[in-house]
Length: 427
Image 1 (cartoon, rainbow, N blue to C red):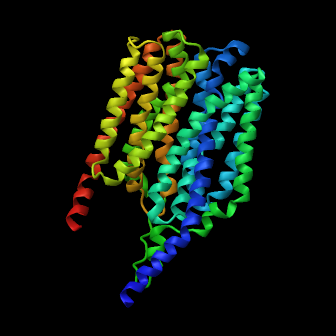
Image 2: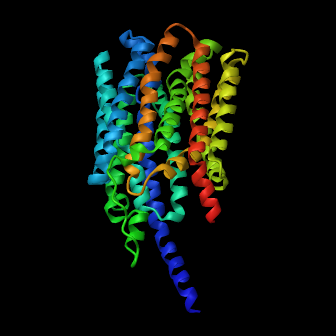
Image 3: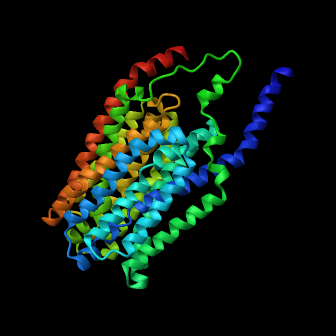
C-alpha cells in the first residue's frame, strides 16, 4: 500500500494543476494569436495603399522587410533579455508596441508613415517566441507541454487567418482602411487588458525549469554551468534556423502576394482572392492538430516534415501553371497550408531537442529569427515579381523554398541520428 501513495499524491498534484495549466496555455495562445494578427497589419491593405499613395508592390514589400528585419534582430537579442529579467513585463511592452503600430498606420499620410508603423510592429513582434516558450516551459506541467505547443502553433495560424478577414471586412463596412487599423488597435488593447487582469497565470517567476526542479532534489548533481553563448556551437540550432528561413520565404509569398497574384491569374475580385490567406492558415491550423499526434508517435520527425512539405510544394507548382481555373486555384493554395501545418509540431519538437537546459529563450530567439530573416529577404523579391506581372513565379518560388526546407530538415535528422540511436539502446 505504501508504494502506491507517492503515485496517488502525484496524480492529485497533476489534477490540481490542470486548471492553472489550461489558463496559462489559453492566455499565451491568445497573446501569440494577437502577434500573428499584427504580422498582417499592412499586407491585406496593399491595394488600398497603392491606390492612395501611388506605391508599388516592391516598395510595400520593403515595409514588410523593415518589419521582419527589426523583429529578427530584436528576437535574437530579446531571448537573452527574457532569460535575464523575465517574460511577463516584456510581453506587455510588446503588445503596447502593436497598439502604437496600428494607430500609426491609421494616421499615416505617406510612405514614411507606413514604414514607421511597420517598424513599431516589428519591435512588438521581436520578443514573442522567447516570451511565449519561456512562460509555457516554466508554468505548464510536463505532461501538458505538448498540448501547450500545439495550442501555441494553432493560435498563431488563427491570428494570421483572422487578420485579412477583419481588416478587409472593416474596410468594406466603414469605407475606410484607416478605421480598420483603429479596429486592430482596439483588438490588441483588449487582449492586453485581459492579460493584465489574469497576469498571475503568465508570471514566469512563479514557475521553474524542469532541470531546476531536478537539481533541487536531494542528492541530485548540480547543473553544469555553461557560457550563455555555448548553444551557438550546436549545428542542430543553425540547421533549424535554416529550416525556418526557407519555410518562411514560402510563407511570405503566400501571405503578402498570393491574393493579388490569383486576382491577376484568375480574374476573381480581391474580395474573393483575399480569402486565400485565411484558407491557407485555417488549413494550417487543422494540420497542426493532426501533426501533433504524428509528432508524438514518430521517431524520424524529419520524415514527417519532408513528406508534408513535398506535397504542399507540388500543389503550389500545379497552381503556378495556371491550368486550374478560378476558385479551384484558391482552394488548392489553401489546401497547401494543410501540409505546412502537419509539419509544424514536428518542427517545434526538433527545436526543443536542440535547446540546452535553461537556454530555451536564447535558442528559440535565435532559431525563430530565421523566420524573420526569411520574411525580410523574400518580401521585396516577391514584390518585384508582382510588379513585373510574374504571377506564377509567386507560387513557384514558394514551392522551391519549401523543398529547400525539406533538405534542411533532413540534415537536422542526420545530426540527431546518433543521439536517437543511443537513447533507443539505453531504453
